[in-house]
Image (cartoon, rainbow, N blue to C red; front, top):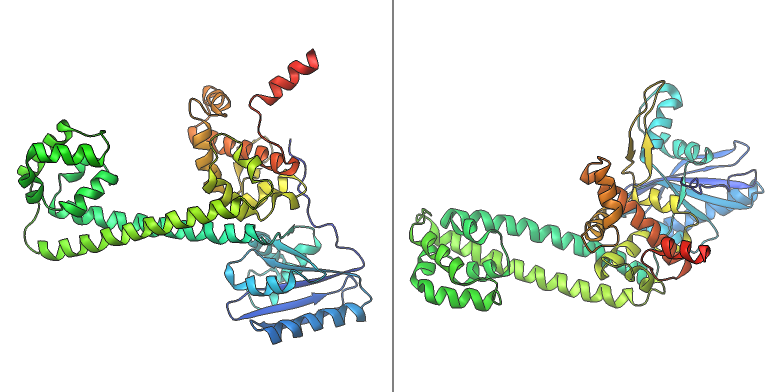
Length: 417
């Protein structure tokens, strides 16, 4: 049973609530005192002068209302609020965020209308915060901030690379449709052939013996004469087009160069991730878990900011969108699902970590098999394993400890002794 998420509990008779409706160039701010006095929504521009005016307005209203604490809240948003948040992070305030779904529902209660306006939204965000439905924001600093940027850059690079690989496969299919029937996918060996022997004619001209030597060398012995013979025969009877082939070859050459460039960039990012990960005090604790590598550990720390700044595992679960909910009514007992109202990249990293952990020699193989034996679908079981891994990671980071396989069983034996 999870402990209840540590929500914002500082909203009292001495707390000033400040909210922001975030925009690309203009934010709308709103101030509310516990006694109901407020400052109507006003604009805050993305400039230092406007930020300082915003802060002056906050401090002035706080003194006027004889308040002690300041809570500044906003909806979970994209990059447009980051300059303002970094300006505020060193101020004596508590930064919190609210779920857009909460503001949407509270908004419909306000005036019984789903209408959205720049004047209405900051007030609604304040209502949500006063109800206690907000979570503290952890802004990554130092190496953790670098890891977040590197992780996001790697994710974008991987997405771009996947798109280019798909384009390349489509073009190769047009001139040599049989190629991927033999080579299966665009592996390192297949990429070498596409780059150096792009057409069926060049493959056929090599002959089986030369093709065998090339495949053995590039694949380091994994492919040999049998695959070379298949590829040779496919090239001999290829139904690839001839018209416009020169233009297609030009684009293929360009895509190959771009993919190689993306690979070099990704390798560089991963080296930098390893370097900054080494500067995180508890990184060794996460890496002690079998199946979690440098990119996963770096990505998780970058997404979370700092595991040690969270008091409960429920907070981290909510941040990842792995917290559970169900819809039940009367005699109907609904199934439990994850909310998915959190950082999607964090869920993705944990999901792939779970796939590694449930392999035959993985640390979560037994629990995973037990779930499958109970009839749980594979995807649902992997999500459950993701949650288990996040619990372990949180505990290890909190205690700066290393993972011990079968710890519960070993600890039980010690107590029995």
